[in-house]
Image (cartoon, rainbow, N blue to C red):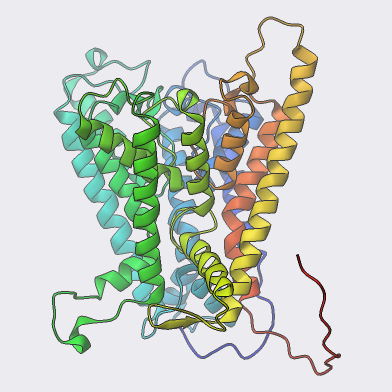
Amino acid sequence: MFGSKFKNTQAPQLWVIPLSFIFLIIVGTLFFKLPFALNPGVTLTWTDALFTATSAVCITGLSTITVGDVFSFPGQMMLLFLVQMGGVGIFTSSLIMVVVVGQRLSLADEQVIQATIGKMKMVRPVDVFIYACFFIFFFETLGTILYLLGLVNLPSYEIMSNVSNSELKPIENVLFMLWDSVFHSVNAFCNSGFSLYPDGMLRMRNYPFFLSLLGMLVFIGSLGLMTMINLRFYYFWRRNAMLRGTLLLQTKVTVLMTLLTVVIGMISFLVFEWDGTLQDRDGIWLKTVTSFFHSVNARSGGLNSVNLAEADTLTLCIMMMLMFIGGGSGSMAGGIKVTTFFVIVVAVYFVLRRREHIQIFERRIPPQLVHVALMIGFLYTVGMALGTFCVIGFESEAVEQLKDKTDVILACQLEQGWLGIVFDCVSAFGTVGLSTGVTPALTIASKWVLMCMMFVGRILTLTLSVYLLRPWEKSYVKYPEEQIALG
């Protein structure tokens, strides 16, 4: 894609990836502690400041505070900046250096870019950077304009609980609406679950326009930039195959699996919540839009228009499966990625069929990619289970200490029991941001575990892909082969 094939097995400098995230998290934490970043009379602990910064940089959206009530306008701007940098800034930083300096990508940089956005021939780094900026600017601007038009037509408008429409001058009200539109449009496209509203998107539960708009922004942001570029160069209406272009295997898999997971999630939510959280939604159309909204957000968006603490147990389980799978490679979404999940599934299928090669869409998947996919899936599962185990352990100890008190309001007292805590842990590790209301009630130790889960969940798939996609080291000594019993 960006040069010749790899000629050595030197490991790329993977420390650059987590160090960049850590730097942004530290900057955000320090900024959130400044007086002008907070509303008058509001205080913010170091743990909450660090948690918010980590959630923003990792574009998760889990929060222990109410953003609109705690942060002033400068604080909200910093939060949005961290979300934007976490979503696309890290991806474009290496490309910026190439474009400005005018040099060829180093071997390590080529590995990072290829593992992030996949392989596509005849594309220069400057092309990727230009198209990345174009897509980001186009969709976020379009989302802002449409969201603003929707707010203008609302019968009443209130951005924060402490700022009412009647208290604002007309010009101030327009500025608040504009910032509201920018904030939610950028957060939706970057697949972050932050909202300025005290009640989140519950405020928009009866407005299918806003749910559809934000849902589509989350959907597009989860496709991945290289998939968008490939679709941009595919002219499906042309009969000439040479002029029509070619859809890469990665693009086909990403689009297919994205549509499949969204449809499955939407139908499941509609069925299991029809007489539950969707009961007060008037009409089939609003119920369907709400189901679509939660299906796409369960994959990585993190926004919700129903109280998930009241959701059916089966609904939460299906949403956790969607969190685990995530979105497309090189996108703002988390999870193991739909391409990784697809490779694992088809590998299992072809093994059961006793086929030597994995071939799909008239293409053969190399064995090395299967090894990488299995490793990502295994380590991702282990990391998620380990973090969840730690949080449950800390909360069990807290319940034991407070069992004689009457004011126990810990997360494990939800109707779903410990499933509420497991749900938030999966959401954190998948950098989704959905919550059953558990996170604010957790102990400090559990919040630190969730921060680590968000951080590791964000960088795990990228660093593993970069490291494991290096060529195999040649072995000059081969021992005799011997079988062992399995199963």
